[in-house]
Image (cartoon, rainbow, N blue to C red; front, side):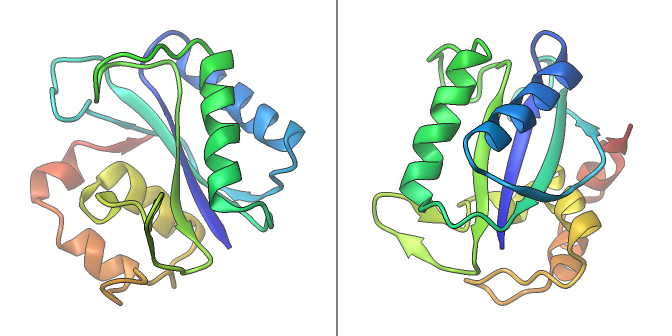
Amino acid sequence: MIYIGIGSNLGNRFNNIVKAKYFLGQNGINITKSSSYYESLSWPDTNKPKFINIVIQSNSRISPIRLLTIFKSIEKKLGRKNNLRNSPRTCDIDIISYDQKILDNTIIIPHLRMHKRNFVLIPLYEINKNWFHPKTNKSIKKLIFSLPIKDLRSIKQI
C-alpha cells in the first residue's frame, strides 16, 4: 500500500484537496481509503494560514519517481508556485510511505519528517491503525504518543 499526504493552506483549502484527489484518480492513482480532513497550524511558522490535511491510501503500482512527477504536475495545475520552503501553498502532495519500503537515493521514503508531524500521523492512524514505520519499526500509536502534547492539542478533525 502507498500512503499519500495532501495538504492546503491557501485559497479554498477543501476544494484544493478535492481537486487533487480527482487529478490523482485521472492519473491512475486509485484511492482505496481516505482519512477525514484535519486542520492544523502551519509549520514551522504558526502565524501563517492553517493547513487542512488528509492522508489517502492507494494500491497503485506506479513507481515512486513517477508519482512525484504526477504530484508536481497536479500541484502546479492547482496554482502552487515554486516559493520558499514551507511557505503557504494551494496544494502539497507527498509520498508518506510506499509498500513499507525504505528508499534513500533520489527519493527518500518513508517521508523524512512524517514521524514528527501530527497532520500525517493522526490521519494515517485513522485509515490504518496497524501501520508500522519501516525504518524505526515503531507502531503508528507509539509515534503519535511520542508527539508533544501541544501538537496533539493543536490539530482538529473537521
